Image: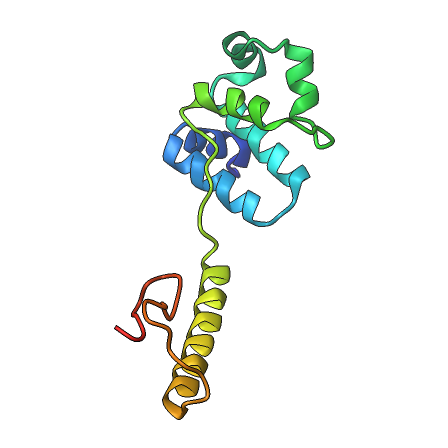
Length: 140
């Protein structure tokens, strides 16, 4: 049985912008910039190669190879220029773990505040909100 070349299969899959976006997102989530640049180079190769892309983004081929090397350090604008012709873009997403932690802190503070208000240790101020998320008002 002949083994399949993983690069050929990977490049075939990376031609799909949705797959490429998820691939880059997963590598980026690992917080390894060198791995991200290798993954970005895989996406570029799948999208026609560095030579083809350099003509479309206005960056000379040697510069693009340097940017995509494991020691590359592209600026945000360069990264956006590289991704755009590939049908991708840079975006920011909510970190769900951080959001859950913030939610837990908010709940503890709110419970504590409500307990203090019920016991009379803290006076409610008319119009004072229990949280910045406007989940309820106190004194109205």
